[in-house]
Length: 176
Image (cartoon, rainbow, N blue to C red):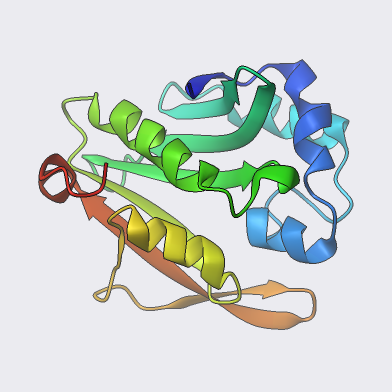
């Protein structure tokens, strides 16, 4: 059984252990958390500074074997009714086993438990097709009306796609 809870500072060591290369680091955070390699202290300090906003939730996912994923969820002031998922990372040893989809189902239950949330958005780099496929399988669609972004990562400009899932589509139940 997957559960979500508030990030605890002691989670940082485990979370950064999943960031095993510069590629994984930049796909995870686009450099917003600094430069590779990240330390547990860097992660804790970032959340101490950023995590004071009541609309910013730093979460850790766990099951019977312990923590296995991490993410943030923000309620966007600039887009009322929108929850934005970010910094989503899964334990390296669990990738490709269906945990991402199960985790996303729990995240969506949490996000849509807030009555004011009408859509959930997230982003994914073009060079991360497995993760994009997982998001698509969970019902997310590319936001065609938004101009594609790029982020400078590892000496290149990486294309980045915004994706969204509306409450209406989620409530149809075909993604659970």
